[in-house]
Length: 182
Image (cartoon, rainbow, N blue to C red; front, side, top):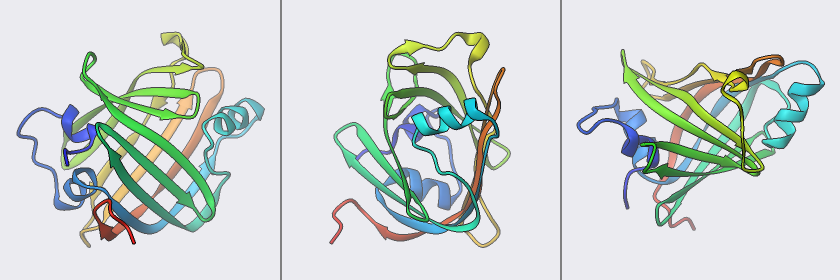
């Protein structure tokens, strides 16, 4: 089993905290709690529906299942019954991660600094049509390990002309490591 695309896209020798290394190094099932705040307005709602993102809630249960098939990783996020799935793979040409949510593809660049993994959006396409740079969403996504050793995340995206799309933040702990689940 090879590390997930985020680890592959980081510079060789990058040393992450244990919680980040564990989540990104092998498949498994993780659970925790999070809060989800969707953007306002009909354009934000349409964009979130296209990506099958959750509708919102405070302190809700979240579960993440990570599976690998060859060079592709599958992330299934369950936000209190609302399931969002994506496929991740290393884009060798761009040296970054390509994550696909249905008909939306996002190219992501992980950057590790100050004990946090920041995820930057480089490119986006909808129905294979590239998004103009002027309309490219901005992300303030970070992952880190908290004092209790838990994997923490704060994912947010906003888009020019639309404003905030979504923000979800919370924590996860490992329930089961590996991809052969019973």
